[in-house]
Image (cartoon, rainbow, N blue to C red):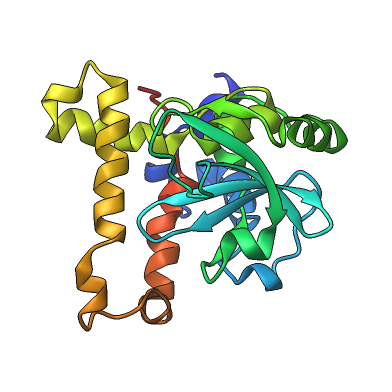
Length: 236
């Protein structure tokens, strides 16, 4: 059996740590999971060069790549919005603390999906050079087919993918059948829906603030965000 098959989502979900026959595989998987640290404020994070940074925005995850001196490169709208409202974005270099703000973040180099794909990271200096060379460029953007996660995985591993987008597209196809053949419409629907929720007036009428939500649900955040590490293998 191909070594990569041991890292399929089905194996990850069904593998039992009590099964002696799979002790070796469990050890490898557990080692990978241990490398995925807990969420913390950006000021407390100590990433290494070319690390992928996962930033928890509660409703979605934003991604950036560490290029040294406390800075990251990410892909955003021309108004610095994580979610561009059109199909163009800008590659930006900023301080990690500015990009993350009050949101929690962690290093997530996607070890499990990388193993599934039998990929190896490119040399860190080349990853940083590629990311820095793109700074200031206008690039194609689509929430479902070419988002920030696609760009960062391509820079680091030479192959673009976004498991978050695959999950979102599955939801669109299930709940919005009219978008199943239109990636562009799906992109607009997802962005508009997220922006409506983020700008909901309910946040201004006695609802708990983002920081209050985080302080009350940090354990929940870590559980729900685990799906970004045990990512789907079927790219849609």
